[in-house]
Length: 250
Image (cartoon, rainbow, N blue to C red; front, top):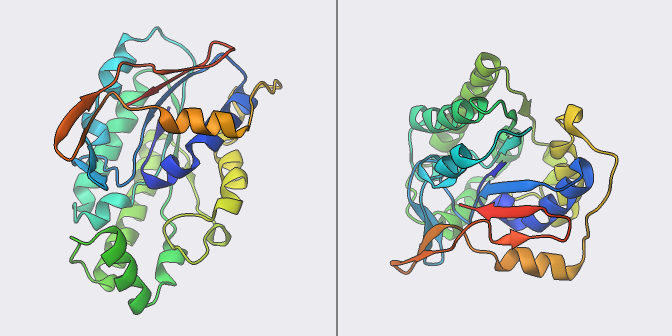
């Protein structure tokens, strides 16, 4: 189970490849991600919009599945701050996802915000990235940092309440871009993330890292989205591998 926004979207072929190596197969991979994805708001990028993760078709699909050992990663939580969602609302959406996952006994990992990286962003650089990535955001740098710190604190509190580990972001993963880890660090980062649930690891290595796999995964479409206000749908799962593994996107 993979939940996230642009970071997960950029790394998705790498994540699928690593997951199949670390956990063996066949796997049923469920994911809700997308550029600009929010946990509770309709959002998107370049004319493509998705429902909020908490309100997506992922959850009804999970309830239809037969019980099976499940691991879940909840990532890219800070995105909603730039949409000016309140810290309380974001924490409620995340807590709702955690509670639904715990209903199926999922082993959950939540990624923390990279506060050190964000605090190192200058005022000029902050304004540039805000204009490029979140042009409707009107929060200034100090207010966004204050909310980010409050959100991180809230995630750690939830982690203790739900007995869920919070995975720390490493500053060395980031380069010029303070939001997206550098591509050269994606394999190391996700290898650490996916290995955080050691009790589920496998000794098999069935995956491939070929360009064909990456192209194939990039072509898959989610169950529901809109493109320039035109609604689109795709049946799930719409990704299948030779070992019986499947990929369903929501």
